[in-house]
Image (cartoon, rainbow, N blue to C red; front, side, top):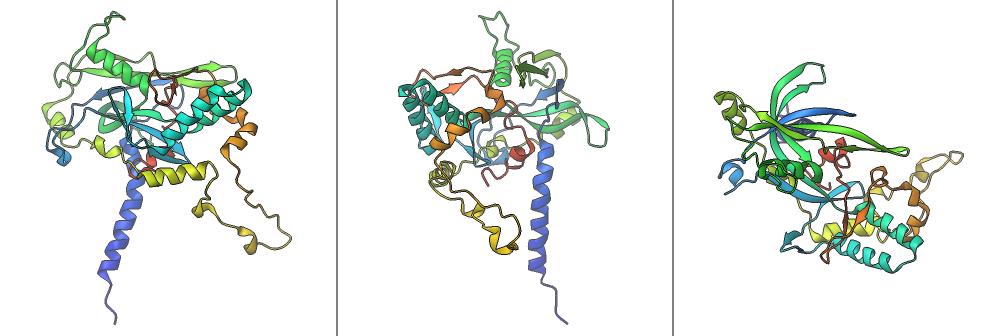
Length: 335
């Protein structure tokens, strides 16, 4: 009688756990209302030094993400004294594309900038937080759920910073440490839907901090602080070679080997066979796809950065990267 291969079974057990874990990982994120609505969260302090083997942990984790070939690619560069430092083939391509658009005819300029918007980076900020009230899939409402990861765009990040630091021009006083366990403040996120013609997009500019309130009981606070998420682990940067490879696939310079499958040899001769059309460059393709640009771009103006970097627009991107597919990639960005 043959003995069980325990090592093989352990590997299979781990595979199932990892597969299930990716689905469970989605539950770690704060979900915004599907339509108009609100959610109240309490931002948590940074993890103490030494936790997650980091000498110092951030209050929030910042990143910029390109969506290319249905993958999320972090911009590997960092900003130093107003300039981007490091190598990013996508960033270099976008910078070149924008400069070329400035020399093009109005029609060509619009087409090139539509191409630019397809893969322009979108800023994201990740915070640890507690969700004050959350309805589960079973319809049961739970209180003080977490810690969870709050993933926001520029608008909400600015509102959080304005609340903490104040704004003299806006006449808003500084609230100080909103994470204080005793005299901190909850943050209420309001999601409104704004329509522009036939399109609509979310706006979060009515969000604000509420009155002072305790974070929780000492026991709850201790539990939450012991179970914080490692925010720095959410920014997984791919190699320059991988980023370059994905850009070339996007532009049609290379073929995606994983998608290069011809089903015709497995079909009967009288079946309708759908074949892959030869890839053309995105510069040519954009001439027939101008009307297919993202809906959330139609009501927002394009603005250029003052530095010599690639331009960015006023699009907040709050919802662009909040879908399940994106969240499922956060543990393995770009896979």
